[in-house]
Length: 396
Ligand code: NAD
Ligand code: MG
Image (spheres, rainbow, N blue to C red):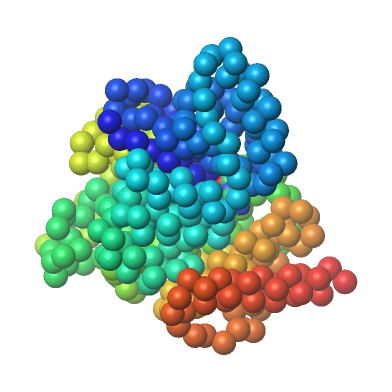
């Protein structure tokens, strides 16, 4: 039996994870579920999975959840202890009773609890790519120090993981020449900058193939998601950005590929459903049913590929440059992007201004190697202040 803490249980990845877990009650038990604001949803999840702990953002949310649960618990006899705040997130991520932590909080907020799980030597199922983008060097060092097992949930990275030789990290590349990172191209593939200037948040969040949270949906529309994934891949597979190529593949059936020196290219295919990488990582090195429909190649019939359009989607170029620059550039990029995406979702800036905010913020900071978590948090904070001030000027 694997005991699991699910950070970000009420999100898109959280819900898909619970769907897979529910199919295998003999294999997985839930230790803790966490959520930020969706208290009713979390209460329903607690009722179904009966975790030992539920963690929410603040005391007010905790009281509300407690009230909802006590009504239900008096009937069912179950008992979930309600906690709140960041310390509690770290506590349930590192508790000695926990084997596996699904890191599915969105954005920089995921960094500290995910690192707590890493430091406690847990098996980490990493959906929260932002934590690796912000603090890749410290994160990977912490994985090595604690002996934690790090498995990618991002569909592209999970695909690459499946196509790489098992002993890849410890060997001298095993004939791997290049990683090919799939990108759907998002809802605005083929659009000009002019066409994208007036798109709304709802248009940006309507992804053609994947159903996801709003932040990652906007990132997919700007191609910043692919940029963050490029940085994520560098850290996960210890590869330079120059050996990772983005391939736009609009059907999202091939989730990524690995090219070998002998001309072989291995790919992982599947329907675009996050339950596949989630089930893969949960059961690894075994395989379990994920509830995903069989891939029907006859129905798909055609797979297309094209180069990314970095003229119209400057976020990808900005992220590539940050990957090359290293130091705190990815952390600055990530912070500026989070602030800009929120401002776009709040309809304070236009879609094409997201890249402006990121570029200006990167230009306005000094590049320094972050030596500690505290330093990463300071760079993150400074970049957020800079971006917010720049957005205020744009609004005038
Ligand atoms: P989401 O917005 O649907 O859910 C986010 C979860 O994080 C929620 O449970 C929310 O309560 C919690 N949360 C939000 N802010 C928080 C805070 N400040 N403190 C604590 N908890 C907080 O997001 P999602 O689409 O599930 O994505 C989660 C992560 O997985 C992101 O890093 C995303 O990039 C990554 N990811 C998602 C997908 C996908 O298909 N959705 C695919 C690949 C990677
Ligand atoms: Mg992805």
